[in-house]
Image (cartoon, rainbow, N blue to C red; front, top):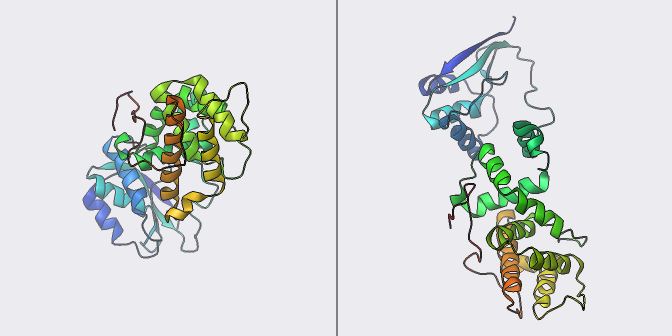
Length: 278
């Protein structure tokens, strides 16, 4: 039997009917469904060769997440539907998956060549910790990164550690937020050097130099794990908030005796339009 493919406008009712034939697929990943549904609601879904596929016996081969997303979005979406896939075919989406950094670069060509895994990790941490930023889709994240490109590039320039544990994207995220809020390049550069090296330069040291050394020891010794934050997002929040507090105190010239985790983030959070959202 030869494959048959055609572009179909799939409604929620059609998606529900298609899913009745879903008897072979993996478990649903709800966050992925929500992400796809957001694209669909915003009219940003593009028709490609990837769509819905059915085996030759009529059961669903590929596309369950897309179908669930259509139902969740509540809008009809054009998609390629392919019939007649041999039952022996078991390989779908098993190739090397593009990273978010790869996809962002594809969106903007040379405009986003500066975006790498670290920049994506920073953005995803901010997305999780500050939902009001609205960084739901890849386009949202790309717009945010492009708007604050100077902050991302500055953080990478000001802070380049060698020590184990000091490369956490949450620390870079704190530098990004501090730069956006204060623009204190000299102070942040000095803080980055202290945090990365652990060495106090007698020519530039001040009463707050120890703030960054305290943070360095806190992160390198993984003191945050004693708080019981075992999951990744919990650890990222502790490191982000601790780093931001240390940077804020350093910029303001307030010496710290120990690392503390503030209940409120010390810097305002701005969205991709430059508006305060926290």
